[in-house]
Length: 431
Image 1 (cartoon, rainbow, N blue to C red):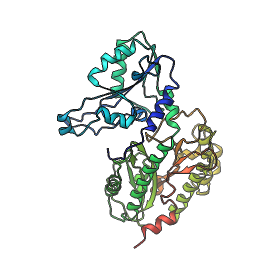
Image 2 (cartoon, rainbow, N blue to C red):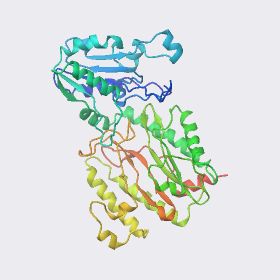
Image 3 (tube, one colour):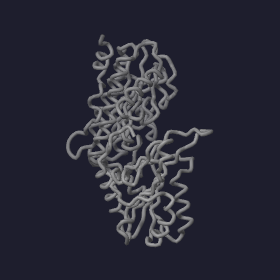
Image 4 (tube, rainbow, N blue to C red):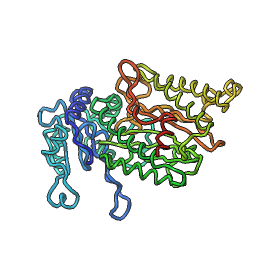
């Protein structure tokens, strides 16, 4: 891994918080992700399942975590099953976790090799009444591929049909949405790396550069700062491309007078950052671009103030919609008649701002969080309003990542990343 070691106390604490909410005499299982094939002998670079990482710190394929807090054998209350490493594997693939290294990483003392899994699980399953399976219940999830977790769950339920089944996900949704200080520090690191990439790009952009060249500048800076790259597929959208919300081709020339909307973020230690900035190709906003830019920034700043403990998700978005409506009226993109006659289910402002303002962020870019429950301290949200005007050839979105505080204003993890139009122009025009 490129990132520096994480204090295992984080994972010990995460497991303690999880097991405290398990039913009596129950067992929970978590699997690594698959290594997905492309074709021939090629594979997609491995990405660890965020749940097993959250609970163990293990960042390796073919790993299984078992938690059984009421197990009669104390040594079996926490177990890691790992792929056995050997000299041949070390030569061809690099060092894998040994039992000693696994303990250093996770704080779990009992580590078995995978070939012993079925035998050990038979013993454990005779001692428990309920098994927790891990399902993906994120509100944005759309999974069409059978995962390693899915296969394991099917095997477990088929082999032990008499056990009661419970779900890990509701517990994890709540635990993962509220961040530990160690997690916040890791997210701050990811945001700081993103800042370095953005400052590099501000000094690079000029008329004639290609969108993919800008993407390359970000990647260069991310990799040299211990990130493995982008936390999600980057958007580098110049001109009218900026009006396509999920534009990812990044293959067009940046032309004089146009804007570039860049929705990018570095990962660090599997934690995400998520930044959007919109900058002028020529180093200076036109009058109209600046009017729209400042309107988006005002909405972002006012929306950020609402992210406090107790805020309701739905009401928050209604209030942001009112802010955006006011700005669109001033910009003469809406008139009072359109607002008066709007459909409550699709308000008039949605013509120019059609997506949500915020989402949870953490180990996943769109992280766990239960939207029907009030916001809490140490949740981290993006704030990302935008105004998209295809008929004028540009769209503007601005986005920061902020931490809800127990008291006072949210803390902006991206407070050092330039966002004021004047500062961006000054940096771009330094000789």
